[in-house]
Length: 325
Image (cartoon, rainbow, N blue to C red; front, side):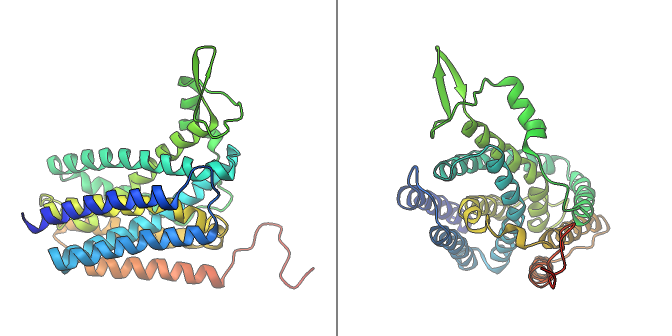
């Protein structure tokens, strides 16, 4: 077996064992996940991802390992935006704490399936039409610019989304108390509960976020637009996405009370998206930015935005100055 084949096999085995461990030992049905438990689960998934990075370093070399770590860090940071939207979805549909963990898990597993399909299609399109990466470059520039100047009051409303309206139009659902159920059989007809709608919306919203994240990761790992994907590139794209998305659930419970503390994180992410967009476009002129520089820019941008968020809280409209009662 080649080094890459061994890496694929190892990734598959580790993933299956980790899922069994997470589902069987750390996630029981109808239980509330505490901050302490969420911290342990987050450390578990992050530690597993770092361990896989170390394995890639020794098995496939430092460059592949750096690509993986950079892609994983990018996906993990973009997850913060997902979590904010996920919180709004759970709040809108008034999902009980004991049902949140299982709904989130199923939604994330469904999202992974959709992402794998999306990645496979994306890779095939780019292999056939490499110029599409330049289109993605302009798209990331636009997305980054829009995100950087996005106002706080532009709040996501689940009830106004096209996804929810599509579900309302084409699926039979009921507002009956779900009591942990995703479907209810009434008079011989199957009705979807709010929990099922939440799961579908989580998966669909994640795919929408993937429109930004997957082109970003592809640009980070691909040497040049007109060079075919290597087996290592494809391994890095899939593994970084899967590990980052699987860690979303524990990160959700860990950060749901503090996600609004990172007021300027979106500006940090926006800078990264703009950087990746520029990186894609300048390759047309045979200017290639190394993965090590990309990693440095991502770390610097995210770290700066987090530190700035901690020391400079935004003032809410109508809020009193700190020295007033």
